[in-house]
Amino acid sequence: MSKTAIKIQPLTNENFAAFGEVIGCTGHDFFHINEAHTERYHCLVETEIKGEAKAGISIFRNIKTSTLPLTIQMLERHPNGSQAFIPMQGQKFLVVVAPSLNADQPDIKQICAFITDGSQGVNYRAGTWHHPLLTLESPSDFAVVDRIGTGHNCDVYTFPASVDIEI
Image 1 (cartoon, rainbow, N blue to C red):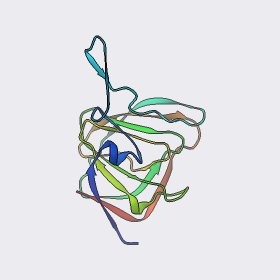
Image 2: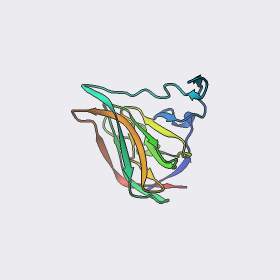
Image 3: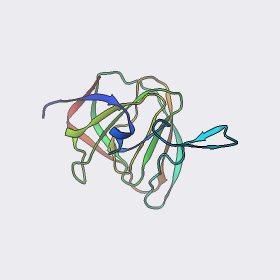
Image 4: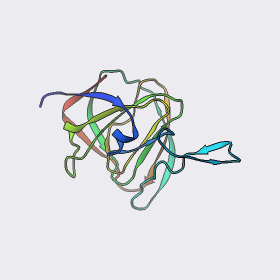
């Protein structure tokens, strides 16, 4: 199988809609609270949780910087819950996703790569194939909201040939 090269595109609500939601204020309605001192962008995403589990908030600290171009060799998915990544330091990060080809693997011919603007987070829907965190600076801290529970909730697919992510 020949090597595939994926171009990075800006992350928007529209171009990411097939994979989940963008967490950010741009393009969303709000209402005022706290005597109009605060704009509340209400329920931007909903956490998906299947089975005996609950939503948890963790901090992931990425300690390895990714540099472009970048070669990837796998994607993962969490079939029993969504997973949200929210940058805590205003840092940009890469988002690499793919639709499912069938019940067991992603469609690697349709991989998409996005770059956030530093103020955006993402919420991967349950079952969305995605690459683990790829940060352009480190250390980088992320608030992560995901399923905490028992049972299998991580599938990994290793590509038959590597894929390049380029600017």
